[in-house]
Length: 201
Image (cartoon, rainbow, N blue to C red):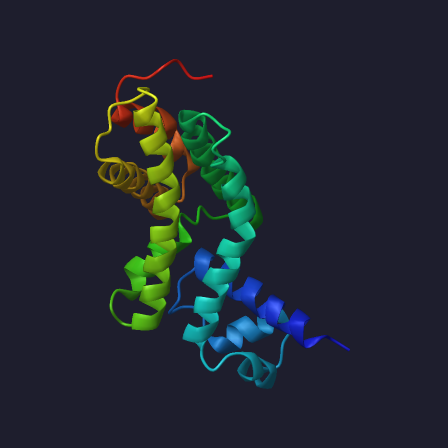
C-alpha cells in the first residue's frame, strides 16, 4: 500500500516538474494526478486546491536546494567564489532540467510569478518570500566582498538586486528561446557588473 507521505511527495514533485516545464494555467489537477499516479480523492486529501499544492511544491523545492545553497555560501569560502559557484550551480540546474524535459525551463519563481501576477495573492506571497531569502545569500556575499576590498559595493543590497535582475533576464530569455546558448557569457557579465576584482580562482 502506498504511504500517505509517498503520495504527497509524488504530488509535490509532479506539480513542480509540470508547472516549471509548462505553466500554472496549463497544468490542471487531473493532469497532475494522472502524471503522479494518484487518484483525485487522494489529491484533495492532501491539498485543498492547486494553488495550495503549488505553494507547497515551491517550499519543498527550496528545502531540497537549501543545503546546497548553504554550502555554497559558507562564510569559509571567499565571497566571490561563492557567487561564482552559485551562478554555475544555476546553469547546471538548467542543463539537467533540459536533459530531463527537453526544455530550458528558466527560473521557476520568476516564470510562475510573471505568469500569475496578482491573480493568486497567497502564491505570489510565497514566491516573493522565497526570492527575498535567495537575495539575502547574494547580499551577504557582496557585502563580504566589499568589506574585503575585492569590489566596490557600498550598497550590497542594490548590487545584489542588479545581479539578480541580470541573471533572471538571461534565464527568462533562455526559457523563451528554449536555448542554453543564452547562458554563454553570463558569468562574465555578472562579474563585469561587480567591477574590478582579483583574477578568478
